[in-house]
Image (cartoon, rainbow, N blue to C red; front, side, top):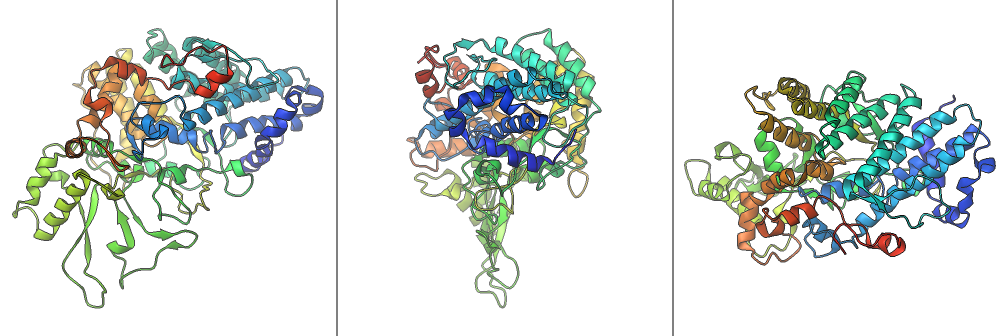
Length: 604
């Protein structure tokens, strides 16, 4: 079978993906076997359109399915401006939220198109129809998995219709996940064992089957653990870990041995084919393009990760807390002084700049020095005490006067009342950063499922099956790679002690998946997969963060757009709040157009 490059195919398929109005005007086009599927080439053009919808910039993985899982996870920060996006950031999601509505409809667009494709291609005599159908089944499985995990009970459509808005009642989450299972089993049977970047293989489908059964185990099906183990062990060795963590987030990653499934993007071509991840996550004036820094990381999560594994090389790759200032379309700004200096760069939490009081010969200004929260001196690196930091600023034996003043000013910025600007400096998630983005468009490819996460889920399975030592050893494959990911081999993250209990290993794996996958496409799902007990553990990290709490004490009314967040007014023993936050609300637009849905997940 003739293969083209993935980038060219995606650009071609997006010619279809950008023609929604044409498809709506002639909905029977996608159902007409004689016109569309008379040859394999025509069938594949339609199939690539399904991939195109999945990767759409608006609603799909080009933006919203990257943004939402981080922004609404509980460990992502965005402006506290009172809008619907802000309310979701407070974990009080409103069913009118535009991001959720777009994300919902894109998944159903993929489902509707794959339904039509599967029906059409199965009625042909094309030699490669089973393989093409398998790809469509795979994309439908991923779409339904996303919907079921994030929304629970959702409308189940497995046959084509001439209109996207046909009224269908909700099916139970387990019924939907059973369709996911069936689709993935079909895909596993007919997909090839090798394929180009951006296309699934037999092993991709089986890795997702393992993930599905791991999900079912977390949802309470005790029989699912053994099935998850079978699939994970069957895939183990078909992939491998990259030698360094940072290799996974380079520009235009291709051929990664760790990539189980990924999507490709490009800047030039159809409007919908580029990736807005860098625009969403990365700071203004940090690249050739225009970043909006819509989503940052909470101070609590940064400290929890860095403090848990002090010296973990993944921190530098995961977070962006310092960068050289840039001008759009030009690049790095000119140096202010004869040599690069802190004035040419920007620093955010936990870094700050302060005046040295010294003006070197030939300089225009006093030299700025860069400081950092002195974690090494604190009782708890995972949760730096605001009071301890304040005490250090008054201790003449610890640091010189200039540093102590800079640290005190920084602490005041992070905790003071009446904050009017962005000086509180939340760190950014760095994995999506594209220095060479054009405008708001990045061509950086996106890995949706990595072998490292498969290993962590396999470890979780081993632990549930009372194979705790196997669980610890499997986790350590991921931790060992992290230790070797810096300029020098680090002692952290250290291998876990064999004396840990089963419950302790379960909790550590829960958080390790969040550390390894921080800022990636499943933070929301990971935090909720084990129900309210573990969601509470995660949100407690945020609500107990000393610096965050100090800001709240100084700002009891929490007004303005630069505030910190304490969820549910600090009350995490509220099971109703926790249960409500295991799922997103069904979008109001769906309820208005689908008369078979009478209420959403919030009981409206």
